Image 1 (cartoon, chains in turn orange, yellow):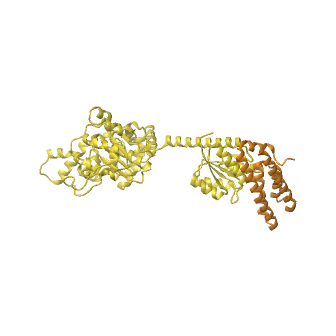
Image 2 (cartoon, one colour):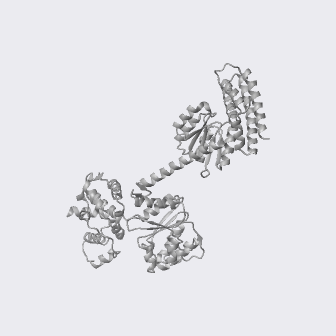
Image 3 (cartoon, rainbow over the protein chains, first blue to last red):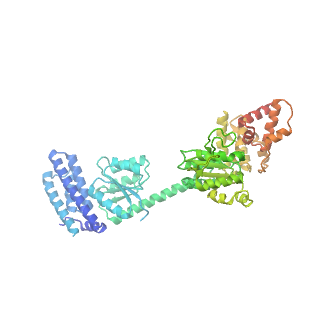
Length: 109
Length: 461
């Protein structure tokens, strides 16, 4: 399954000049790094609110660039009713994040 | 796209913010960005954006709460809510709070453009409608009272030229409010905090007019015991209103022309010209173009001064305004004179409406002041109004009357002071067409003095 929703990601690549699109990918990468750290820290501290807030922001950032796989995992993380623990969700989320970044970079070539 | 707008983006996720900013920049808009509701509100108040894009979930408080606070702070911007699929219901709630539209994330540039353009257009239409409603429905403006179409046109002109430095030339019959127009213009202009200087060209002896406008230096002429700045320098930064400019002697017109052309004043007896920054407003009740044609007013000065003409309509052309003004004046005079009058009866209103008011608002003021001073009660009846109104006889303004002093001197004789006083007051009233304030001005007394005397004489009779 593709890491990106081609409709959203391609539209974005079309809408924005290449250098701006590259800046967006760079911002997205910074968001991922920061929010993944926030998630891990909140999970370790048992801070449910912080965990859900970081997951929400991650879902928003992922949705903006069409990273559907990452958005799905982030939405699982932000839903406190779901049974999966952070230890299960986080590795999957990081895998999706890497895949999304790779796919987005491919659009700039 | 519509004209470039100020767009405030309130979005906490950097990726989303960067995408929105890149799109908005591409549309040609000016953009500011806040990462939370508190900063967004502060920026909206300070910057007054045309549109605000609001993320629903912000770190400090919700987008809905931000909308409520914007509404409470009377921020007049088109708000567009940015929302994810799962929060459409909340977006609908935001619409109830005043949002113009909502945008589902992620959105393409074309969708953002259409949504934003529509919101801006809707806002512009609403503003145009509000302006039109205001312009059509104003019952007062500055010092004026009146809702007639003729006055709405005056208000619009005054409002549109208030921000400029252009010279305004006010014409209108006596008593139509030329000085009120000049002061309203000054108060509506950026110069409102600076001086508003009035100079009546007809009231100043011709020999003194130059000194009154441009000032003089000590020793310039007999009696010039000290330096005097003059009206032009006193009005520096503000507005100089030259009333009855049609009465200005020709030699003085040449000096005024030089001042208008150079923007500098040289006091009488002085050698150094000083720059002044003022807005010039002139007025006359004469047909100024006829004065030019008759050679009594310089043509070159006319073209310098007649930049923005404002024609004040006579009261008889203002429809129901006469009653609006009469009711306002009644309240004012009753308060001023400590009387209980609150309203007119139907017959009095009909008489006021039917009268042609050749002396315009000033005449209306005199009649009503007279009625308030001479009578008691809560209602002004038709019988309390002067005979002039009851007969409905129009008295059109004639040529300026001779000075009452001349009339008095013709009948001067040694007699009791009270009789001389009564004779002089009645002569002044006769010569001014029963215009109490003008008669009072000629006699150099307060109008209330004349009203008091009239009351006393009526009781004595």
